[in-house]
Length: 296
Ligand SMILES: Cc1cc2nc3c(=O)[nH]c(=O)nc-3n(C[C@H](O)[C@H](O)[C@H](O)COP(=O)(O)OP(=O)(O)OC[C@H]3O[C@@H](n4cnc5c(N)ncnc54)[C@H](O)[C@@H]3O)c2cc1C
Image 1 (cartoon, rainbow, N blue to C red):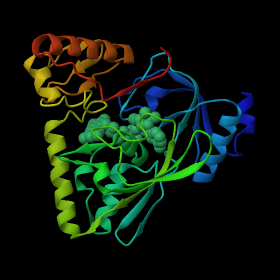
Image 2 (image 1 turned 180 degrees about the vertical axis):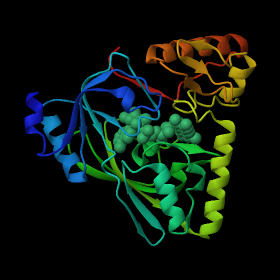
Image 3 (image 1 turned 60 degrees about the vertical axis):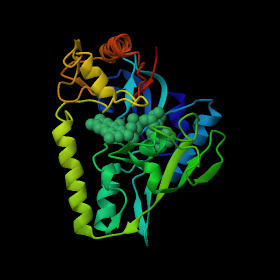
């Protein structure tokens, strides 16, 4: 590929790479090219070359909220796992976009900083969590977010301060082309043992309620106003409903799990079955939280 010659020297890349290796659903066909920058400078340079070549990349964090087409992705995927630096300054922590959210929570606890405990266990990157305004157990990442650094589609760099424009599973980044490069969180000094105890409790709740032994992308649907998606799905008798290797979890009806050999097509078909039945039974149209990408 001609493009590869223009990329920063030494950048890691994978050609014709199955995206099933990079999504927590373990489904998805091959991407033509996956680029793995290992530093903010390498990312910047990579995005510059892609811009000049007229290529709009697909940004992937940990693929924990993604359904990639079985046909794969024609074009370039940029994965940010290499941007995983974390640093603490007083009660603030700054993380590279590719840092694991779980690692960030642990790092906060190690530094006796409180505020991130409820997010512990969400298997995304910091960038993906900001993009989605991920949240759990009554809190959202925006609650501790101070600022986000990004690179715009035209290559300009910026910092978005504050939390205007964040909502339920939505951020100011959700509808645009900005690449989040790092985020700074404002936490509060606390007692390390208490913080770790709360994290352990959150983890235990996840293990008890969620089918963590099988590949999934967490809750497939957003919470409809005034309802709980899982309860509606359960009431419609859909637990255990399957298409190919995809199945509505018996443990948590909001999860679709890959019981082995599922394809993205199976999962999409199952999503439609669930939406139709729930709508027929309750009049509520479920909206997906997972994002679809790739060739249709
Ligand atoms: C077992 C399990 C439990 C889960 N529990 C929860 C939960 O409790 N709460 C919750 O909110 N979510 C939950 N999730 C879903 C998922 O972990 C979150 O949505 C997470 O924030 C996604 O992060 P990611 O890095 O995997 O993003 P990806 O899935 O890789 O990407 C998601 C979107 O973000 C974009 N994106 C990612 N990184 C960047 C970046 N740096 N710049 C610009 N755009 C970017 C992508 O283009 C894509 O559109 C769960 C998932 C699983 C598998």
